[in-house]
Length: 115
Image (spheres, rainbow, N blue to C red):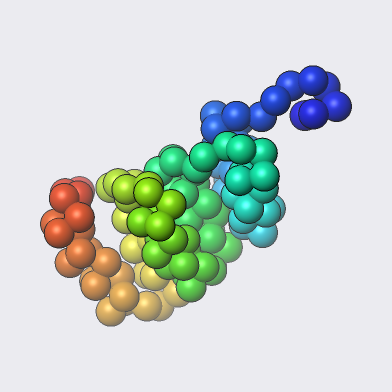
């Protein structure tokens, strides 16, 4: 994008990470997330949710949980979509106890579980 004189912003990064998730490219999604600070772009809950979903699709439940745990330090509050993606990653990895643990944390985080 810099060659085209277009400066990437939060929306373009979120779209690119989401596209990586849909294309099964979890490594690329994480690479894009790691490039954001150098580009002076701040990730938000959409960014993290898309990256966690990419990890979930790639069977990377540990990385999904790592991303979720990084959110408070980044001053980003997980939302229902973020928790759903992390719970789904645990489920796909056969980590039912972790999935239930995340579900039980949602009310404390003031996030209402959906159906």
